[in-house]
Structures are given as C-alpha cells and as structure tokens.
Length: 427
Ligand SMILES: [Zn+2]
Image (tube, rainbow, N blue to C red; front, top):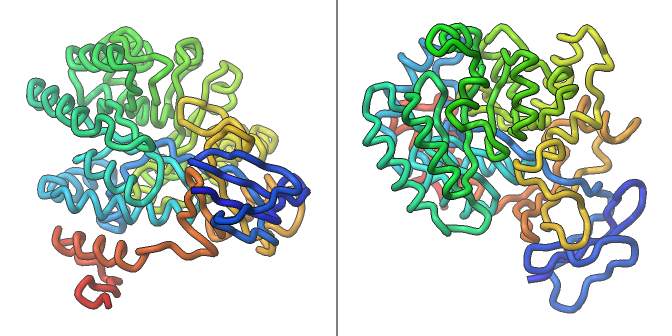
C-alpha cells in the first residue's frame, strides 16, 4: 500500500510525502503521487511528527467523571477498585478503543498502557491502528506472588507476536504494591526477554517516607538495588526525586514520564523537578495518566500544563521553552518511548497534518502556537505506518466505538448521565 501526501507545509516549504509499506520512501518538494497511490491533498496543512503518550491507563475512559474531586485513596477504595473487580475483557477492549479514538483525534499515535486484561488493550490498539506498549499492573501486596507471576507470564504469552505495532512489557504497579522478591523476579524476566518495564515511582511524598522507613533508601536507589533501573525502564511521575536519584536515573539510562495534569488534579503537592532532571541528563517524556484521573487524553493540554507548571515552580519564565516542550511531547527526549527520529526517508510513516488556517496556529512561531495556543482540535489528519486513521477530522467507526464504550460503562453501573448514543440505536 502506498500513500502520497501533497502540498503540506514543512518548515515553511511546500512538500510531498510518499509512504510505502509503513515507511517514508520520499519526502520533499516535487514528490508526486504515482498511479494507484492513495492520495491526501494537504494544501493548507502543516506536517508535524505525532505525539507520544508515555503513561496512561487507556480503558479508564469508562471511569471518566466517576468519583472526581475525591482524595486519591478514597477515589481508589470507594470508586475504582470495586468496579475494577467486575471488569470483563470487553470493558477493557471498548474502553481502550474509545481512548484510541480520542488519541487519533488529538494527534497521539503511540501510548504506553498499564491496565488489566492487556491482551484486550493490545487488540484494541491493533484494531484502531495505533502503536502501543501494553502491560498488566503487577501487584502482590496481598501475598499472592505466585498468582501474580503466573498471570504476568500468561499475559506475555498472549501478547507475543500479536502485532508488530503493539509491544509487550512488564508493569510492576509501584514499589509499595510489589514485594522486593517479586521486583527482583520481574527484573530477571525483563532482562532475559529484553522487555521494557513500566512503574509508578515517587508520585507522593508518603511513598518516599515509607521507602526510607522500610528499606533505608529512597525509591530510585531501592529500584536500582533490585535491578529495575535500566535503559528499558519507564518511571512515571518522579515528583519527589532528589538530585542523587536524578543522577542515578540518568546514569542508568532510564526514562521519567511526567504527568503534570494528573499530579495537579490528585494534589500530590509537588512538581517533577524538570530543570534539575535536565541538568542531570535524564531522558524525559510526557503522559496524561489514566482518563479516570486526568480526565482528558489530549496531550496538547498536558503540554501546556507541563510548560506552565515548570515555569511557575522555578519562578523563571525561561525554565522550559516551547520547542523543548514540543520535543518532550513528541518523544524526542526519550528514544525508548518509540518515536521516529525524524520525518525522513526510511523512518516510520507516522505523522500529523494540522489545520494551518486555525487561528491558534496563524500567529507567531509554530512551537509556541502548538504549546501555548492550540488544542488537539488543530489536528486534521492522523497517519500511522502509512495508514490514514483520521482524514479531515473523520474517523471510521467513531459512532460505534462511543456507543459500545457507553454500553460497557452502563453495564458496570456507571450510567453516564450524558449518554446520547446507544448501540441498539445505531443504524
Ligand atoms: Zn498511572
């Protein structure tokens, strides 16, 4: 399959792009479609790389608006955990499909997911056409280490070779929900199989205090001692990391994904120390966290909050600039997250076309317009591996995906009050 885009704006120049078998085979002025190519007329559109969501729990779209404004532990104990005990494969599948729909609409083409029934999430990402790294959260504080390990191996088997765009990983939930023995076991399995590891780390000050009390060292030091701080590790949050931990993380080559909106909404009381992380050489990405606790999957919003909160915390408007923020959101500051290195021949044909006529993009420099003025609504067309997932704002199956997700939420007793589309009403 070959796709040809013509007339797009790239760095002020009109260019075309041809994609064949998922890769860019031509890009530049004068690229013309060949007979049989699928064509997109991109006149009046800006060509940019896509966004990467470094941390989410995608299927939690079903829990959006359920238990908002509660403190974290009450939200989990009274709302989320009781419903999650009743989750079925189809809940995760349709919840993830809805998340994918929103990500396609907002220009995100790859996401790192940590949620139950990862094979269903992987199938959803596959069917939606996105790229993803998926994993079940591993928890054994209830002493059920054997079941947890069996479940982890089973889900790796289910995910093996399912899709070239969807990778498996291991996801110990956090250092306070997985035993030291099991963390070492996870490090061993990940090392043997070359798998990435996702973990929540240093999200709250309590986690640091508890880690010091239990292990006599701070969370990143502890994670390193059990063998889990490697170039394949993605640490989510990192709000309370100190300078020693940041240097250690940088020296091990691990990635920190900051989730500023979720941190603010859950009132964790701090901000990821980005300027110090940058000085130490830490690789950094951006995530939304789950749509149950954000509640949006529009990374444009998170990009702006990232820049604002870092400037505010540093009391320095120059603490981070728009281009740097854009680079973080597109995965350029953390290669492990899976971004292509550039829009050039031989690279995956993953890209966005933005509405150049949008007034938010019409003034000033593009990076500042993207980070401070735009929302995901400026995305007009989304392409992954040379396949057009959204064309001029239209996504195939969008009505059905929303209707099915609403149905699953109703089945779980969440009765969305604004539900307007039902599966039985679809034509
Ligand atoms: Zn999370």
